[in-house]
Each structure stands twice: as C-alpha cells, then as structure tokens.
Image 1 (cartoon, rainbow, N blue to C red):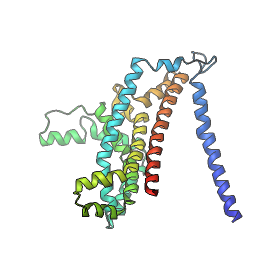
Image 2 (cartoon, rainbow, N blue to C red):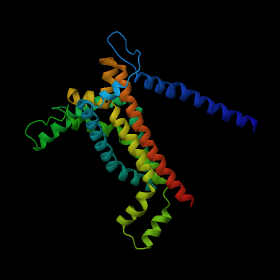
Image 3 (cartoon, rainbow, N blue to C red):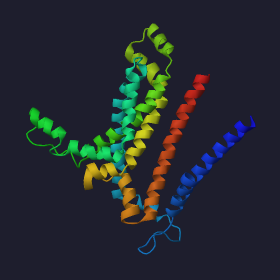
Image 4 (cartoon, rainbow, N blue to C red):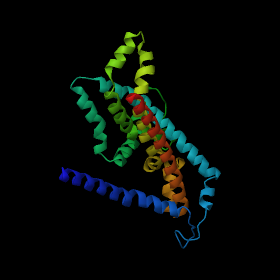
Length: 284
C-alpha cells in the first residue's frame, strides 16, 4: 500500500513540476513581457506600461480578431455538422468496421499536419484536382481561384481539425444509455424529438469539448493561413508570429497572447460549469 501511495505522489509531483516549468512559468514570463517597453535595441525593457494592451484597440488588430473569430467559428460549425453524424454512426455501430473507422480517424495524426497542408495545395491550386475535375465535367470554363483565399484556409482548417471534433463526440456518444432513447420512443417521441430532447442534451459535454478543441487551434494555427491563404489571410496566429519573429515586438505579441489565453480560460470555465451541472444532474 505504501509503495502504491509513493508511486502516486511521485507521479503527481512529476506532473506538477512539468506543468510549472513548461506551462505556468512561460505564461508568467509572457504576462510580464506584455507590460514591458520595446525599442529597436532592446526586445523588452523597463518601465512597465499598459500601452501594448491599448494598441489592441487599433482598427487593424480588431479586424484581424474579428476575421479570426469568423473563420474559426465557421470552421467549428462545419466540423460539428460533419463530425456529429459521423461520430454518432460509428458509436452506434456493432460491426467489425467500427474499429477500422476509428483507425481511419486516428491515421491523420501519424503524419505531420504541415505535410497534410502542403497536400491541400495540390488539390486546390488552379491546375489541381478539384479544378481539373470541375473543368472535365463542364461545371466551370476556367479554374476557380480557390488557393490563396479564405475558402482555402477554411478547407485546410476543417481538414486538419475534424478529428478533434469527432473523437470527443465519439467518446461521449458511446456512453449514451440506450434505455433513455427507448423510453423516449415508447412515450411517443419521433426521431427528431428524441434527438433534440434526449440525445443532444446528453452529448452536450462532447459537443462543447469538441468545439473548444477545434475553435482555439483554428484561431492560432499560423502555417495553414500562410500556405493556403497567402498574404491575403492574416489571422490571430499569424499576428502573434509576426510580432515575435518579424517585427520582434515581444511586448505586443505577449499582450495578444495573454488576451487569447484569457479567452481560452473563459471557454474552459464555460465547459467546466456545463459539465459540472450535467454531473450534478446525473447524481440527483
């Protein structure tokens, strides 16, 4: 028993030390840097200031935030529309194909997302697969400008982030109690009413977790807008990258990062409160 407790405390200590060094300490340093000054000869320097947070009220930055929210929200919604039926069908399957389909969802993680994004260029470029098929079918007379557009960015985001929506939904749907669905149908509920009143509320934690796992990376992934959107598409991730690596304005980049982390904390708080309420309801 003592050896089990000792191993448990050792494991927890290692996890807490790891999180402190590689998560909490960098966040503290970034938070401090966001209140520092910047000039051409010093990346950060005293005195402390709130000017960089005031700069975020600039119209250009607000438009980038707005565009990032719009594209990330559209990507999240589309991933939910595609991922929910797919996850539900897999979760309710009882055949041997279920394991194969789950494997097909996981396989993309075996390849670098950067390589998969480069493959999207082959598909979306003017002489790519999509335009070649549409021209061969006579749908269009000339290639559509898919590449280097917001459409290409959204397609790339959905392609890379769809598994992050499917897997939480799959885990949540698999825990559904079939007796509740049968009871709803016995009481005269049709399929739509059963889904709206029983299935969707019970799978709401999976929906929220999937949306968070898709929405946040969609706002901060910088290489997909760079490769598929070109110079026309600058999202929040590109803005942070440029501030740190191009203009070397670390305080402003840190201020943007802190604002985004606060947004992340708010979304996690919403998710925690929703799941806590669901857990308490189940206990009652």
